[in-house]
Structures are given as structure tokens and as C-alpha cells.
Length: 202
Image 1 (cartoon, rainbow, N blue to C red):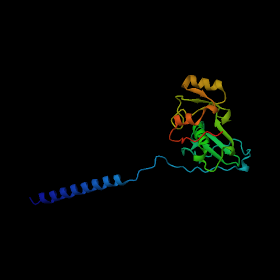
Image 2 (image 1 turned 90 degrees about the vertical axis):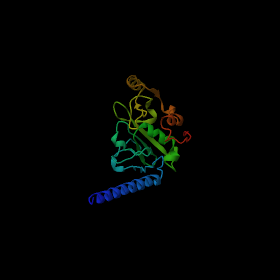
Image 3 (image 1 turned 45 degrees about the vertical axis):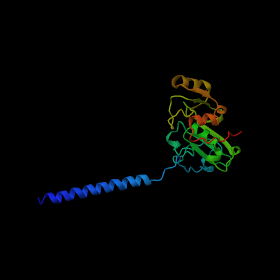
Image 4 (image 1 turned 90 degrees about the horizontal axis):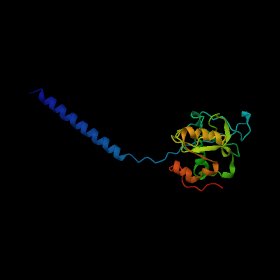
């Protein structure tokens, strides 16, 4: 009998402590502030380095620590999909795919406050196949393919010519799109949460 009382008291104490822990935990969960739907990534510009031996508006190697100003990814981890944009003053931004490059271009007011479309000196994408840089406005793109890129979508893979794009479509599906076809409406269909209906630059 003397042994039962301490055990009963211990059981009551443990039960009380568990109930208190559960109540406090639930209260803490209820009190947590709602996280924002979007997270802002600070992606500083990479300034032009005259020691590089490159022309100020020529394509550059992707720095290991550069972050995509649209999604925060590290483009150096997906070099075959990477893209870049260079402003007239030599500042460069790097993107994890052509998709995020075009989202940036169509939303300069959001992603680059104070910058104007007229300040964009050059933009480049990696050509699927050979992996070399090619001017973004001269590339042929494929939309809606089954080949998932860094953002787990078709991500507008870029090609040097129509023949290369059609060979890719034969294996992966999708349709050919040209730079002029990559409007804010098309981008909103693919990534609605990143597009805020900014007007297309003229």
C-alpha cells in the first residue's frame, strides 16, 4: 500500500506535466505569426571587373555565390540552364533559367526598382546541346516540354536554331516560342505567383 501511493502520485504528476506541455505547445502553434507568401532574396549585382579581360557587355562565367534575383537559387549549380543580364553600367545579374530571366525583364519595376528597360545592354542564355552563351533575343525556346529544369518546369530551354528546338520537341514535347512570344501573359500562365501583371516593356 505504501508503494502504491508514491507511484500514483508520480503518475498524476507525469500526466499533469504532459497535459501542460501539450497545452503550451498548442498555444505556441496558434500564436505563431503567419509567414509571408513570398520571401525576398537580396541578390546584389556583380559589377564589371576590368581585370577579367572581357568586354563590359560580353557574357561572363557565373560566379559560384551569385543568386538569382527572382527565386534566390544559385545559377552556378545548374550551369546548363543559367542565364544572365548586363546593364549598361556593367552590373550583371545571373538567373537559374531563361524563365526567370524573362520574368525579371517583364517585371523590372518589381525586381529592379529604379532600373529602366533602356539600361539593359545585353542578356544571354545557355544553348541546350553545346552549352555556349547565346544572346537571349536571338535564341529559339521551347515551352511546355517534359524536360524539367531548375524550377521543376519546362523553364524555356534555349536553342541556337529551329532545327535543334524541333529535335528536342520530338523527344520531350512542347512548342517552339520566340522571344517576342514570351509575353507577360505567357509567363503568368507558367509562374503566376512571380508575375504581378507589369506591362511588357516596349
